[in-house]
Structure formats: structure tokens, C-alpha cells
Length: 286
Ligand code: PHE
Ligand code: FE
Image (cartoon, rainbow, N blue to C red; front, side):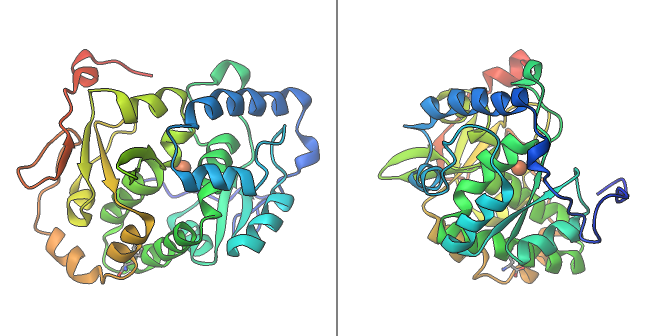
């Protein structure tokens, strides 16, 4: 991370803060409801089964911003995970430490009614609606914990930039094949009105079979929809290729290899859809 973050005085040593659920206003709860309603119809046939099942088993369809205590109780019974509130971005070390202990850190603020589509910082809707349903899936739950442990280990290899790309192209922007069809599982996609359709159906982006080293070499965009999405075959397969692999030789190999631009298609790629990149050429944003 380029800028060292400083801990706000109200935060605990592990950077957590009380969610203070009782302090949300009625209009803040209604923003959650509007976002929820807008996503849910669209995701019925687009999100992967485990995501939809998680929404259900965690009772996330209930009106209003979820209470982290109550959500954590349900989650703990299913997979041992908890959701804890943090004031904003936290240092890498703190983030990995929480994941390694099955704690998911979530923002507690919610976007303003006039910012339904565009946000600079992840809010409670992105963090909870986007990320938490999959933590109810036992295999994905194990992947997230393994990622936390992997993050702590990657620091010793000075390879965080590479590992962060794995998070980006799986946890945030991943696609999965389910009974032959492509489905969404990345939190950054499922919590976005526009990208939910774009990632799956638009001719612009590449859709490429997931390959670990390829993904770790690929830069990503933070200012627009992704130009490439990577498709996994199952969460079991993802877990095998990551938790069950030693990344030390991978990091060593990648040190001498060039990065790949976000829109590139390689001859070695398992291409599912070769993107037109029309959106990028047109310079569309937002
Ligand atoms: N197995 C990886 C390592 O050896 C750790 C890891 C697991 C990384 C899962 C990402 C996801 O470092
Ligand atoms: Fe996120």
C-alpha cells in the first residue's frame, strides 16, 4: 500500500469499531432496500447458486441494513465466519490477519441516495451484500481464510502485488461455470447494477479460463468495468489451485516475468469469449 494508513482514535488495536446498528437512520435503511431490490431481480439468473443460497440462509432479504451481530451469529453456525465493522481501509497486515481468523471486515457506512451507482470506497452494501453470502459456502469460506494466510506469507516474498491480483480476479470480479453456463460470484460484480449485466453478457470484455500465474501477471482497472474476467470451474477447483499449491516457486518465477495488460489475450489462454473491447475504445466510464 502506497500511503501508510493511520488508525482512527476510536478504533481498537485490530482496527475494528462497533457497527452501532441502532444509529442508522430510516433513510439509510431505505437506501439498502433500494439497492437490494435493484440487484436481486437481475441476479436470479446470473449469480451462482452458492451466492443465492447464502442470501437465503443468512436472511439477507429482510428489509434494512443487516445487524452484524445477528448476521455473525448465523454465519458462525454455518461456517465459523464473523463480520466485523471497520472505519474504512485497513493496512494489509490487519486485513489478512482478520481473514486468517475467519473475520470479514466490512465498512459500516452506506452510500447516499444520489450515489447509488458510483462509489469510491466500498460501503456496507458492497461489503455485506457482495461478499458475505459466499462466506456461508463451506468451500469458499475455506478459500477466504487460506487467502488471509497466503497474504501474510506473501509479504515475506514481497509479492503482495501479485497476490492482490488473485483476490481482484476471483473474490471481487470472478466468474464461474455452472452446469455449462457462466455465472457471477465476484463481490464487485454482484453488488454493481451495471457490471452484473456487462460481465456476463456484453461483447466488450474478454472471458478467459482461470489460470493462476496468468491471473497474477494481469494488471487490473480500478476506474471502469474490467476488460477481462477469469472463469473458474468450481470453488473446489479454485481451492485446489491456490490453498493446495505452494506459491513460493510461483512468486520466484513471476519476478522475471512481465505484467500483462488488462485487455490482452494470449495465445496460451483458454478463451471463452474474445472481447471486442468496444467499451474501452469508446472511453465510457461509470
Ligand atoms: N497456498 C498459497 C501459498 O503457498 C497461499 C494461498 C492460499 C494464497 C489461497 C491464496 C489463496 O502461499
Ligand atoms: Fe470488496
